[in-house]
Length: 482
Image (cartoon, rainbow, N blue to C red; front, side, top):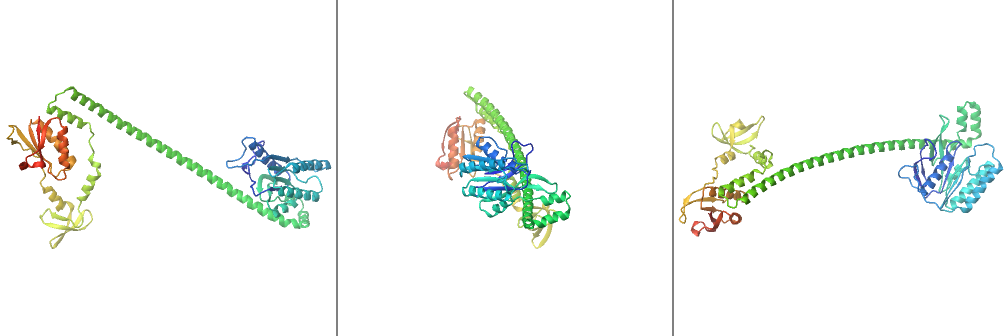
C-alpha cells in the first residue's frame, strides 16, 4: 500500500499525510501521547482501503496504491478516560482473540491502544507478544500504543517499523503530521516547564528518568530530520507545480503558433486555388472559342497562345538566388586582371584596401584605385563578345516561289531551343512562309528529336523531313507550312 497525501473523508480541513506500507513491511507501531491523531491515522488507512475495495474514490493524490485483502479487522476504541476498568480490558482482549483466530496473511489488522486497560508492564508484554504473533503470520498490522517498550521492539525487530504523530513544543499542540520511521517521544517535561512548573522539580524528574533522556534526544533529532525532509519535499512539490505551469504555458504558446501557421497556410492555399481556378476558367473559355471556330488563321492561333501565356504570373527575378550568385561572381577579387579606365592599361588586383579601394600592380608601378576607376577584364570581354542574334533569312526556293526562313538551334539548351522554335514557327505563319529550315545539328540527337516531336504535333505543319545531304542532311530539318 502507498497512500500519498491521504485525508480522512469525514473531517473538515483534514491534514494530509503520506503512508508507505510496502511489501517487506509487516507491522507499523504508532506511539506518542493522546490527542495527537494516532487513532485518526488508523481510521484513515482502514477507510481508504474499504472505499477502494468497494469501488469508491479515495481522498489521496495521484500515484497512490492500495492492496486487496480478503478480510479487514479493526479493534478501535476512543478511551480518553483515566478510569480503566477490567471490563474494558476484557472487551478489547475478546476482540483480539477473535481477530487472531480468523486473520491470515491476506488480512489487514488495525488495533487501537493495544494492551491498554491493565498493568502497564503486563500490557506492554502482551502487546509485544500479540504483534510478534501477527508478524510471524505475515499479517499486515497497524497498532497504536502508549507503551515505551514497543519503541524498542519496533527498532530491534525485522519487518516492524515505528511511527508517531508530530507535536509542536512551541505551541504545546499536535500538528497531526504522520512521521513514519520515527518513534513517538514523551513531551511531559517540556510541557510542564512551559506551563510554569518549577525548574528544580522538572530537573529532578529528568534525573529520575535519566535512562530515557538519551532516547528522547535521539527521537528529537529524528523528528527534526523528518521535519526538515518534509519542508524539502514541500519545496520540491512547489517547484514541480511551477514547472508544470511553465510547461502548460509553453504548450499553449506552441499550439497557438501552430494554429496561426495552419491558418496562414490555409489562406495561402485558398488564394493559390483561387488563382488556379481563375486561370482554368479563362483557359477553358479560350479553348472553347478555339473549338467553336474550326478553321483558324495563323495569326488567330498566335493571339490565342499569347492570351494563354498571360495567365502565368510574372516571376520576380530580384529574389533569384542563381542571379544573385552570378552577380557575386562578377565582383572583383585579389588576383583578377583589370583595365585602368583612365589609361587603358592592364594590371592585376594585389590587395583590397578600405572604403572600396584596391591596390593595383600595373607593370612596375603600384597604384590605389577605386572600383569605379577600373574594369574587370572578364566582364569587359563578356561585354565585347558579340551576341548571337536570331536571323530570319528569306531565300528563293527552287520548289516554291515563296520566301524561306532559317533557324539555327545549334548550341542551345533544350528548353531554350523549343521556345525559340515555337516563336519562329509563329512568325513564319504570320509572314505566310511556305517553307522553313531548322538547323539543329546531329550531336546527341536531343534537339533533333525535340524538333521532330514539335513539328509532328503542330497541325499547321503539312510535312517535314531532313534536308538533302549537300544542304545539311540529318543535321537540318525542312518543314512545309500551310
